[in-house]
Length: 441
Image (cartoon, rainbow, N blue to C red; front, top):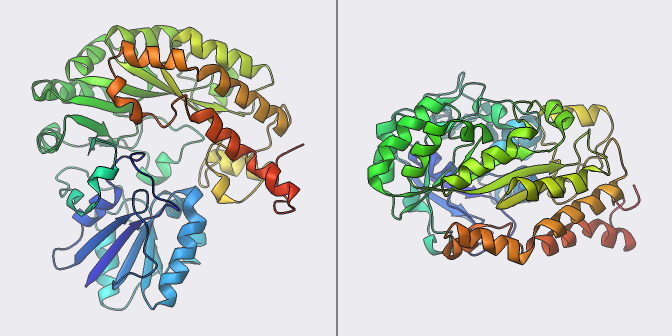
């Protein structure tokens, strides 16, 4: 039996994507008698025809329409097609309209093997899911060898140490995928993965690597002798633990992405993130900088307590606290999250076109301003923050000039790209093509 796994994306790009562990992990969990191949649509074209007995797809919310179209094409060719991943887990009944079966949650732990066994017997059921989140100890090695175009990825080796998050933010779909429990891999297993890494730069794919400080300290201490360069996500509270920060720096931490989200206390409270304290942000960012760590912050505009005054205050605070870089997004109410259920029940969804669920386009009508005011404020923040001199000074200060391509949010393309995307609705509306255009709302 031959299985072909596809990471769905509409158009491949060069040196814009990290290698991920999603499909390599699925391939690693596949029984040895099954031959397997991977197509990563982020870096290669997805073929119109595939020679396979079974096709498995994973895709994000904004790529769901493309995945549904691909599935229909392959099924017309007589191939069974199944799906998994974040959007499938959030919307299994919707996905089942387009696929022969769906796998929700994580593939390891028996769910994937069960699906394959049923397929071989010609008895595919509709939905497959583990009863409980599986242990992530003794995971089979991810089949990174199946990713064919290594030169097209950013030059980082993907590593996984934990799954899940210790928080439950209302805009995040993490708990719907990984469950409520925060799980860790044995430190010695992570170290063995690191020793096999093909380069010095390690990108941890974890949602919150420092969710359990005690574990993170043991991990960093074990990584110190390996002399790697670490890049990862964490909650900003990491900076409050000096011992943890010291060990992270000694282990080679170069870059950390932290969820700032907002400078409005009421907005943080509304999204279940009141553990973020605005008054502490500057001290935390300075602590990272004191250890030579480049800090990128995630920010969300359009939260329910945001007003037209939020944008100027946000821009001022981003500069005041000393962020080196930022990923500034509009609120995305991902299906399956508390935020989606809330804004849907309030009738505030502007569109159900998933291709616009990118963070660049408004998909929620804000509570305290018009959509036009939201977009004007959004561009005010982007244009004010992404200044060439400020960005390059941060890169130089952290000796990261050679890694400029790491940041898709870089000043030289971010404002232009986002403006083009957000103005798409206006252009389509003038042509009579998009009745859900945000302009004037």
